[in-house]
Length: 367
Image (cartoon, rainbow, N blue to C red):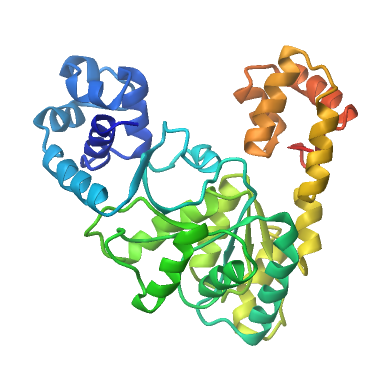
């Protein structure tokens, strides 16, 4: 994506009154971000869900000055701006209806074709939670997942730290711009993460870590990964919000059970009791439900697949599942432009060939 495209994406993102959903609606209708600003007002007004107020704001071009300022900032600080339409945009996050129009990235991590899990929890982590987390990340090392968290105190910090200690990539999702690190005590950690991992945010330079920004940040934590693990949480808190968001995106949610009288296990126990999360006691639980195989087994499967001839519908479904890893039957049919009956037949054929694994609740996963 060249600088001109980035400029117009930024200008659209910072236009008051236009969120990510309406921004994509405008781009899809007009053919690109620049064309949105060049389109005639009476055409914009006819787009479903938009009115004269938004078309008037666009015509004023008030966001161009802000976009130019941010362009200069990202150029001078080695930051990559990734639009929703860019191939480098995290593929699972792209499936979320409220995915940011533009993400800002620092670091070397690439989310494409990677196993990604989010680990969240209380800032006041106990020795029980820490003991679980240390062993959990160590046991996941053979699967080489990317560990995502929010760079906060407690569970977040420990997740990033243990990922790096075990040679895993880790991503910090920020609730502010890339002109700062919050909390400041984690600046050294954030710098180390850039070598094999990275930092993501949708917030511009100058955006401070305000309270409402953490809620927006949490939806990226939930949406970017295939599963969210809540290690410890009180009865209220950001971790439970992240778990709810992950559920709304049809992602797997896991919670570590704790003692009934422990304040920082109340949230996890509630998630399990209300069927909002599966109980997890070790990495084996995650491996089984997600259907993870070691890289060696995956390479052997890939060699076997080379000898299997697939028809066009099977290839379409298979390629889609390889991209998203796991999806519901109805959504596979929708995204592959097939009827549900045809999709079910195709999935059965793929399952018989050992290419797809069926899971409870009409979920399917690339084997």
